[in-house]
Length: 379
Image (cartoon, rainbow, N blue to C red):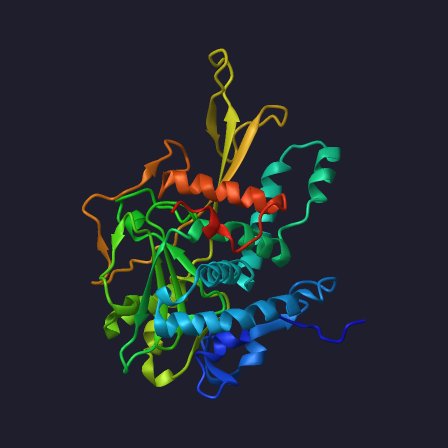
């Protein structure tokens, strides 16, 4: 029986980047609002059997991957994105999505999504069908991590800027540090979606107390052209970026120096924390429809329901309301996107989306390896 019951869901090297002594980090605990100026990094990064008792080797696998990514993130923070080769850049994108999918927040989201879907599907179903549904397991961290490997290529076309904080201000992070949002969608310029291929997508990710990453849709937004893609923020802009962490955090906010932060403002921002990430919709087939054309209408709780009729249950991610604005982030005069003319909304580039789908299919059939998307890109 293995003795190591603690399994990491936040990389220790990552939190050390927000630490002065490499052993402890400042923490704002969301549940009780307490501020701990020196919280053990080891205690913050792990939980007992986070991946399950049958997955004792997965933690070692993640740790070996993180040791590689530690150097990549250091190079990215100091030298900028042009310093990374193709393989390093794809490795970083995979690491980024893993931090999105393997956190405590992702585990809770996956369980809530599973339970809500089951509740809707089992409504008025016969017992033998309900029994089949109950045997379906929710997505766990292993499944979500595999999903990250399959989905990272869809981020490859995003632009990347390195944000720098002034000396009297610092970036914070959280136990769910990668946040997806859509400023153009919030302002009604595009459909408000945070799908990985959707138009208007933005991704915020702090790299250390003085450095943060912002990935952006190059067909919608324009960034200043600067050496090493570095953009120097004002103290107010850092505070607005820190608000993103408050919206996505699960249990704790982390920081290096409490003296560089407005704790009262952080607690205020935490009140807007995203608690519902998925929206479900149900549709039933319309009777007496035209021959050869299937039509559906929205089904609402309380409407008559017959399980024998065709029914669709769909879900979409709910974009957080960030109200994010910064002087360096501008809109293109003529945004570039592809309209799918469907519930998919606007995609950044359907040709690139199809190329990524092809690459993912090749990986799943073991005809291509991860980290080799660049080989399929046109010259």
